[in-house]
Length: 257
Ligand code: PMT
Image (cartoon, rainbow, N blue to C red; front, side, top):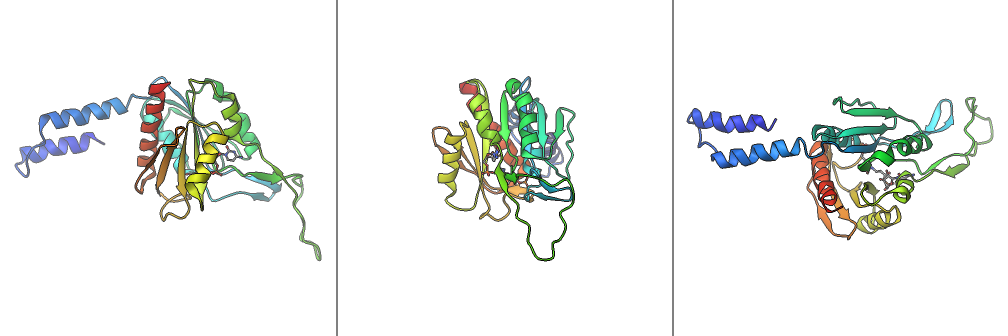
């Protein structure tokens, strides 16, 4: 769709409605466009998206509000820039458009970890965008838990595996591993701590305190924190544009390894 503004410039010049854009600017614009469409060519990218559902019984689960929009936007952005993408997705109401995206549907954090571990060794870039439940019921019931007359049932929880941290331990020096941090307070400190603890190369911080950011919205407002703890704050943008900013940052890291 960058072609459109470019031909728009030409058309407006030809029609005499405005000054035609300088030819060298049009050329630079087109060069940037075509560079971007192939700058991930030959790269394998693993992305996690959406929530996980942790089963309580056949009709109930522990979950969260993730819609998958941010993760799917990242997958489309990577595919449009030439990558082969494996998108390990929790339950969402979205579908991938590009034929370069292989969607692997999972439900629980355990299943998500298993599928990630299958493709992580051959992935150049891995982006952990899923909102993974940190806990799961210890003993999910195989029949519907009945409403008791007196007692409120107690659900004992166990810790789920940390997918990002597990992959962080397995990471080779030439692989890039990117996490997200979803925070409500003390944002930068918490995100930096996750970056270090999970052995990530970069973390994308988004805060539930920002309007139009995080769960369910078409927009997001992020800060990128790198392993040297340098930080860039971005404006509120469409999730597809946020995905573009994130990939541009990852390419800078890839250029260094
Ligand atoms: O799906 P949307 O509606 O578009 O919303 C997008 C989003 C808000 C879900 C997304 O932008 C986001 O912030 N994703 C990460 C949510 C999260 O779980 O953050 P966290 O701070 O709890 O986790 C830190 C990192 O560890 C994340 O990369 C997460 O994927 C990962 N993690 C967390 C727990 C766990 N058990 N395993 C993990 O891999």
